[in-house]
Length: 277
Image 1: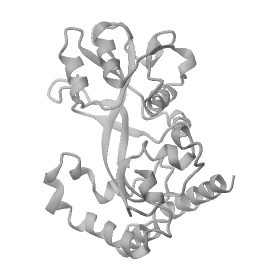
Image 2: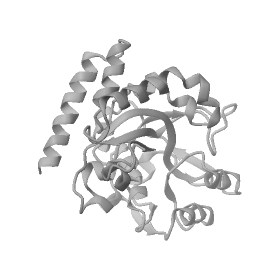
Image 3: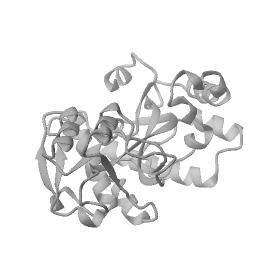
Image 4: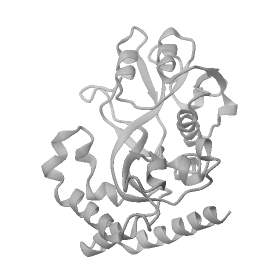
């Protein structure tokens, strides 16, 4: 996806906030490329994610985690980034755990059912695989990541750009009987490559259309109702600057604040330093 952006074969792509992290930072499979100028044109709904254990486990909080086994997928480093982020919000790292290697993500979910691993980093709290775990005899429990620990969340954002997410319905979370859980989330973003390949007018029109026509298309996919203006303006823990065309639209409707501009200036400076390194 990022190759077609860089080559100019596509103007925009839609991908998760974590998916854009590797090219932005020039890490993992993008190490040979180095850091890339990835901008946000819009950001939308949040996909719930977190750390899960069996429902019959004696692990209840982050304090119970040190020394326990946790999933590791050597062939999918982006999954491990999520795991490491979630551990960091609890003041832990992978070094505090015992890593158990799996060949794929589906095998991770099978592993927790079979008891070959105690803790897993779940890509999505609402995937069919996690519902399968929740319906198994072992059941499913989520380890909460307290949202009031801003220092830990800020440190975790340097590992990967997840955001705090209060989850009311997911595998193992019944909205009628269970309390909401403080977990993490991945933002679904619309990206572009730099500001030269995508004009200010294109980004402006894209942002305006998503905002003003949301009611017309939000029923076409479960994630689309989350593509709101409020979500698009939520910049906390994000490493991506907004495209100037998007900013133009935000200013036009009076939604762009001094806080947004301060954040934009800082993120652009960080990007320029990465690109120059």
